[in-house]
Length: 172
Image (cartoon, rainbow, N blue to C red; front, side, top):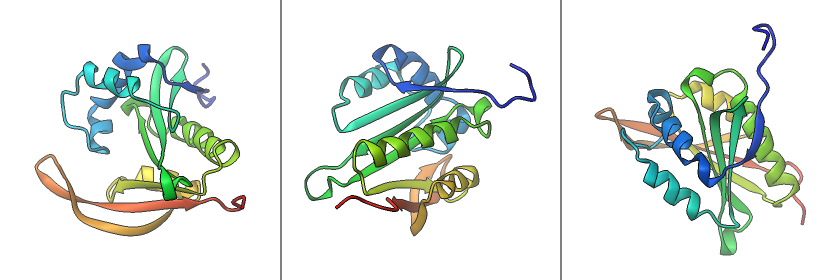
């Protein structure tokens, strides 16, 4: 790849054989800093997560060549909230700010809008994760609230923002 060219990413559904790479991704300090994960995550937990994915759970991965550089998920709610899904995204430390998040978000939004008929996508993000907040805003997410002392991270309670995106033209 020419250093002047932006990297290209392959977006695909996660597979069970991605468990080791997903565990390595989740254990990266920068990834962990932006999530609720604790240090020293185990591959067995990633395997269990992948095995329990059902028809309302969509886990995508971004690859640069053969390297897994990010994951993103949509998890649809049920019952009277079947029009809603929760979103999560993680980008490998060396790949943050290089377009993998945009590629994954584009794929998730297309899936949500054009295939799943979702109206609302929700997420939580730590208040100091400016890069992630900017990515979400780029895709139409708006801040709906602040949750104080939301989670313990590195021995300090940190606040979180609740953000959501409402489909701009939902089907009836």
